[in-house]
Image 1 (cartoon, rainbow, N blue to C red):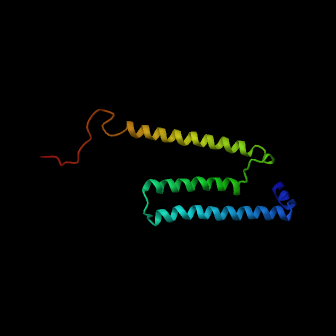
Image 2: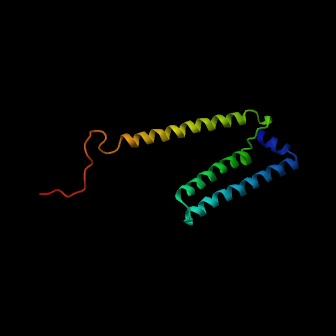
Image 3: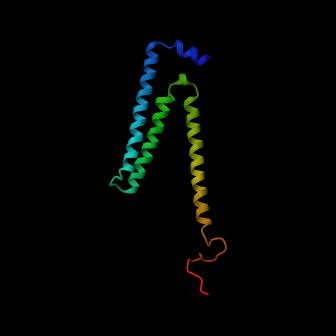
Length: 129
């Protein structure tokens, strides 16, 4: 109920600025989605490392666009704790992602066939009768 009252009390200029922010965010998000999609689906003649780098970079920039244009998280103090909570969330996510990758790497290294018992990997040669 209070959100409706706050929206009604906004001036025309404030609503116009908010709409402009959403439209800019939508356009930037669309461009940042289309570029990696076109590169991957169009089989761009670039090295796979650069292709992966471009896709990840576009994803990171798109996260920043969403945070700024849709969530309106800025360094202004009128937002209260929004910037601090966002930084905390990013740190927790970074710890979770790094920890998950570390665990998966070590599981892959330690759980390869033949690593547990010291036996060799079975071959696909037919058995002789």
